[in-house]
Image (cartoon, rainbow, N blue to C red):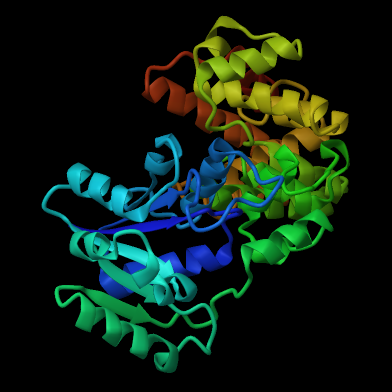
Length: 399
């Protein structure tokens, strides 16, 4: 296999890092890309107020997940766990032991490439891995790369060196980005989920009040709590909920908030769901306690109300998976939006979408009927609220 090793302080990881990663994966035809956040960078001290190693590791993991290639990317904590300065030669030795026989490539930006011969043990670095350098600006072309590339090849004849241009690469230094974040700026240089994690954890001098977030900030914070593979569904659900709100006279912003947060706890472990529900007094039945799919609606509703301050969408999120008898307008809209947003694809979805804009209770009746059929087909226990909703709406109630 070809494995790319992409090290750095990632303080914070930004769009430029991801663009470079994509370009290197394509140019080198990498089978795997490994992000390696530095524990203690040897070339310069971390800026005062920087997040701790574990926090930078989490931010880097969130950033890497945005590439939507979980089977080909990972974040490795080798340098975080190592005591003392994080020397690249040591990391590559460790990588060679972890992936024996595989071809390693060390990825770096222009500035690092131009000083590579001054690093600790450059000969060991170039023996263990090829080097792929990517330009951060249009000026980082052959005029910059060629002299250093030729010098390294003359000095280390066995060196494997590749230099690539990354068109449109975001050109922002980490120092400048940290300054912008402390002033409430810099959002455009970051993946949404990374920005959301920074706001949620109040990193880099940010001071967001989670109970007073704008819609855009709320999206980012919610996205930071789930895997990137879920974002298409969340975005689709938000837009569908907004369209349904306009059709049926509900508050559009309220429905957007509900859709943005409805899956925010989707990937928590069972015990994490249970802890949230206990903390905020959410009653759970035995079936809910044992079922991830049911638990995320309960814990998500609790966070929407108690962390983000949205009492008015609590019930919509609480029942968006099971439905219930006698739902409010907002509960119906989120239930249906979640069921038939544009990314959903099943045989009955076309009819469900038609009903959603012509007969809302009919759509709820159809949704609950499909859920009952699915549970019976899979020989799964039916939630009491879903059974009640099926009986209530299936009998033609207009409540």
